[in-house]
Amino acid sequence: MFRNNYDNDSVTFSPQGRIFQIEYAAEAVKQGSVVVGIASKTHAVLCAIKTLTSVLKRNAEELSSYQKKLFAIDEHAGIAIAGLTSDARVLSNFMKQQCLGHRLTYGRAIPVGSLVGMIGEKAQINTQVYGKRPYGVGLLVAGVDERGPHLFEFQPSGMTEEMVAFAIGARSQMARTYLERHIDSFADASREELVQHGLKALKESLVQDKELTIENTSVGVVGITGDTKKTVEPFKLFDGFEVKQWIDSVAEGQGGADAGEDEGEDEGMEVDS
Image 1: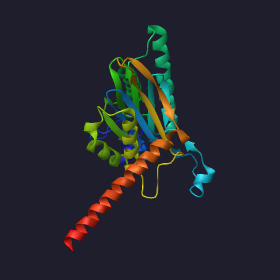
Image 2: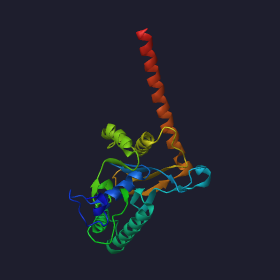
Image 3: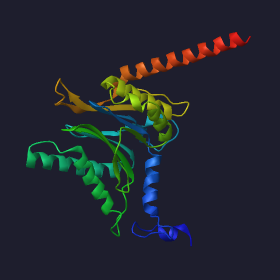
Image 4: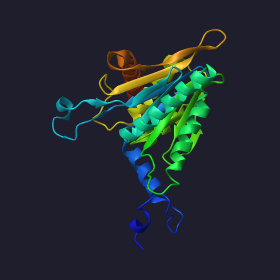
């Protein structure tokens, strides 16, 4: 049997027990530009590389605009997307409706875990009903509630999981490797340190001829402030010149590290000679 005999819908299992439609949706996530999320005891940060919307390869910088990758859902939550933007828009609108309904009913913000559980159930239905398809988008959901900051990953299969730090999208494995090396420092990191770690992880995933710029970089921050840690710092998006200072600090830090490595190599050569 050929593989395509089992990939016409999302309710047909292959002889190996696989659902190819879900795997195709996961591949769409891997083709999206990389996004990174990190959570500490006081803040949750999302960092993203924006993609060009034009299909033209020639003169793309002049003829194209950048596609947003970060979206505010409510005062206390935001998302980063990797994959099909149209599917992300459907899920983000659903999440906004749930946040608004919860505020009208209970007079307070919806817990982040409950919100993520709702989109997980919504996506799960599309893997169980004939005639529907899985959402071809992955999400990183950052938010705060009564229990503090949270970072969740959402997959097209409907699976959700809370993370300390994670990255999804193209070449995201390199970003995850960076996050794994520094994971012990995230819990007590400040807001500025979290953003710098997120941008450094993004930088790890870029191809050699690409750089972080104010045009292609977005940052989203949400957290809790004050001595009692009960005052919510609303989710805020930073674009354009608002991220320039962070990008410059990451570039300076990288340059200093490279210079230190070069000095070490030179010292080693002198000793050997």
